[in-house]
Image: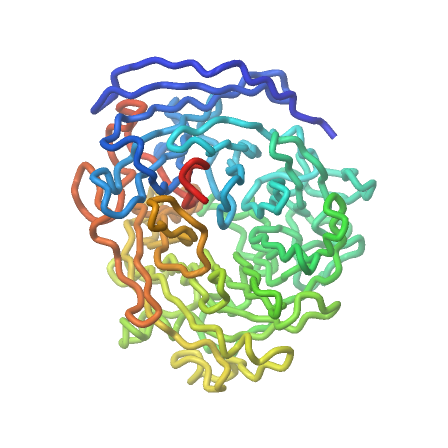
Length: 569
């Protein structure tokens, strides 16, 4: 497996004029396996009280022109310290070059003190590994290129292990169609870049590929459900998107989304429903460099009665594990289906998944007219709180059948304690039209705590779809009496980003928002987290000037809370 030759060649420092201020510029570099030099160039804006411990919100963003020009991709560092005079200000843009138009996508789901940040760029098939120990400065620690993962493409999301390495979900097939041999010696036949089957890649803190594993079974997977274009000799639904691990259980949980290249152009989209995945797969990771596929399960369809063809189980975007040692369950959420599923035991060789909530019930809280429903709602980021009390879900509101005025995104939170307390014998199951709109009737069903509507902008170059939040992050830090930060299991803030993938026709208004949460009072938009330019709530990435200059609008996707090493205990 091709490695990455790392060559840090110093930190260059200078002061240069930008669109609105003077920024300190520092650059770190690595040499990739292709022999080229890759850079992270910081543009650090002077801060009041610069030595005060701060919390930061990282937003991984790309050019709003989709790479048509030479505007770079960058990691925006935003002051997320409540009460700070620069709260909500973009204080650094770490420009990653020389790639442009690479469609920055996700990072890991949660950042723990000392972790590197793994940031994926879908279209360039690249994972950047970033050192954030000295925030707001960001350093490039490694880079994993397409040539370093020849059997997998289109990196999506990451789960960082306790040793600092990460598993990445790569949605797409091998770079070249035909047979491909993985690091464990297994071979699969794929239909090419952004096709099938995808893979699981373990990446080191220096960006090296530690292992590349097929996400697909060796034999054909449910041919009636698993379509491929062009067809494969052994059909596969393996297009990994969501990825989370329970190291104590030696299990890795992965959701299958879609054969992604068939959905990158709304004018030529494939309407074959078998290209929208309904499957969740679980791996045994006792050998961290050789995940073993132990189950592939198709989620069941639900009771919803809609005119269109989409069932509740289609396009399984996300999975999320539970955290406490006495819990073994996990959740999965669907994008086209707009539903939440649960299994009580991911160590079972035959996990049983059941629908436990429908997005329609959350919509009813602020849309009693019934116009908004779970189908095609764009269920996205899904995350359990570290204490296993709550389940957070971001929903884009991307139903193309509705007008932008009718559509709405939202964030909602469920109380999942009763469901988890039911152990291996949960009773909750959404199996009637009344439960679709009103929530489950069984006593252990998730209870809706609150819903926050978030209306997004019109998406896509043709203005096809209005969307709200797609991705999110939990703030897992709290400030102590000494001003320094500690990790906490009690979540009081979320962040969301209103952007999907513009090339699909689903764009957004490019805002990053902070949401306050209290288990009794519910969700509330943090209106003090305001854009430094237009002074409105949320940070607007549709702006002319950045710390790195007048480069115009950008599209934020992944978001993550983090703290410098010196400021966290």
